[in-house]
Length: 258
Image: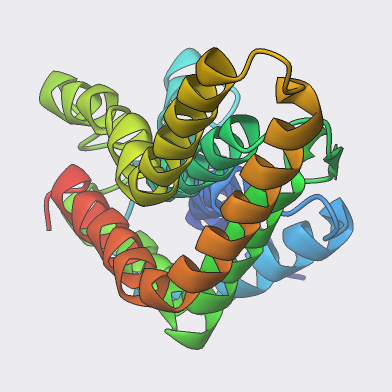
């Protein structure tokens, strides 16, 4: 008859449960893995499979009761590390979606909003196009594999129960939030500038000829100009989008001290 002591049972549970919590934290916030179209059961099954692959190669953990206060704090610690890694990449996608929102609002396309399953809210069609395009670059460039690689490396740089994100890491994550506005402005600035010039020209034209209906001629012109500029800029956005995703990976490595 096989018998286990309490310490051995705790060791078996924590050897797989604590890494699973960190992995599920990543799957909760990271783009592609946290997509709402992926059922929760699939994410849990994928996280469990990854845990059985990763856990045997990890250094030994401190022997703690999983139900004690120390064990609960370790669970919270692992979830925060995992969700921080995914949230860092998520900020890049938020900045790109912001660019689409700014372009859509400037060209008068703000009324064309659709339900976004990722954010469980409404976003413009241009924002969803840019988000899907970036997601395509993320997959084809194998950045999702690099994201998992960073997660695996985090078990070495931030061992379970021994190290966690310090105050400087949270400060870096907070400052990284400014990347949302930087990315949004950098991507949308060419189109927004062109539309601003069009609006100035329409304002001068309306001032010179007050009998013209500004709303009758201005809306089609700004809408067509915005769509034309969006079509012209789309091929040139591939390199910046790849750079933004790569910057997200670099920030994750800096966050987990690789």
